Image (cartoon, rainbow, N blue to C red; front, side, top):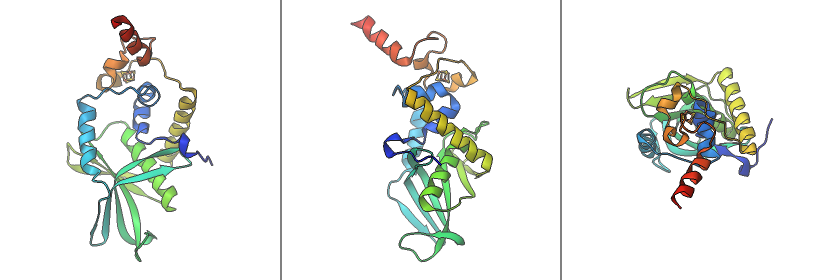
Length: 221
Ligand code: SF4
């Protein structure tokens, strides 16, 4: 089992960028480029609403916590859960300051419609794996809430998903350690990519975004 140090932790939300496109992840998380288009602005607003910090509410047998900080030493990641729901259950875990035991259920809020790929599922599974490590529990399922359909979809954290999350993080750590940004490989994903103008999939086949920006600055000076 891996045991990453805190200074080696990568952003958990990066798993969705990495699963979408390795180059997009590297531009954001290695080269620190970010191009805020409508999609990312919308996404941020949704998350601001969900991340009502330090908010915890009890409704009968349910406790709802928002903006919960999470991490995993095994995956080498840190991030936040939009919402974690705790359902009173005899098979659950004890929470600090409470006598009852609770089942743990992460919920992630997403703009748009459910996706045809498993990017969101990877992010939610990674969140569940963090919570399991932190709370010493097993989590069977969580939910993805999509704003366009105003509905939550159940996700069962199967072994295949967990294995894929581990592989993705291993690959992310290897790429980050090498500070490696893959070259452009144009796919259908490029049309919906928040970095497409910066990445320049057609014009900038061999340049990194950093090189491109430095080139522009050089031309102006
Ligand atoms: S434009 Fe295409 S190749 Fe470039 S980062 Fe986006 S998805 Fe990846």
